[in-house]
Length: 384
Image (cartoon, rainbow, N blue to C red):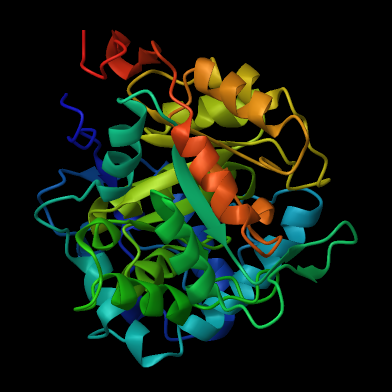
């Protein structure tokens, strides 16, 4: 299909969260497991149809079922640190289900119940525009804190600097997109941060170039309701961590399709990369840093990048721009065919260094590089 076309994917019924059935907040885990069960049961409908609960056979009542105790309701359980993440996030989902936005007539439920007539691809388009010209696209990863070596949150931002100001600074330096975290525990973020940024980017005083900057919503997503929350806040794409979701990844990608946004899949291993491709991912982000151990493998991105098909947007992240050999790393990723990179901790050093780094990356043009779909650009930038 064309670059801007969504895959002709059939949607699982579970891609649509019917919050009217979620009145028991203590059963978020069981409800999540039920979503996964429906997805694996093979119930699917054409994209043009709105799903109703009556379309599917009865499942065990959420009030009497446990996603961990009932073998008929399997729930993917990640290992190590991500197991703790999953447990914490499922508890957060219980809280989200109590909010007015999650009622039957609330905005999150309405988003999930009705498929958008037309999908948007602002995130991919912004990065592709740069890579097609021979440059790396730059995504600024903005968050107040991050997981430290001890597994606890570690403050990142320089004193007195807010996330909106940091994002605005990155955009003024030339960032092509912003990844804003809504995770509260590890990143000290919230969905309102995304809302404030998108309002800033669409305000009356913003320049045309800044207003076009897409916002990627970041959270440890384990449930469709989280995706609806990020979209309602203004995100045009969301991050999906393959190691956290496992076989439930396709379910979340289907949810993104329903909402008309892009799901960017984060991977760290060969198996996760292949899972993302098989699940229909249109954008894959290779994280050189392991979510489980925090260790960085410098050569991982190039190795996994070779597995990503040309029609899939390819991104790299994980400790980029913080080493003496960072310029060499950027060139290596560029030559390997990556469309863009994510800069995170490297933008929290304070002073003018973050802006200098972004401008340096954007100024480095590969005179002739392989572009997705097998195209190349000549020194003048035109497609040959």
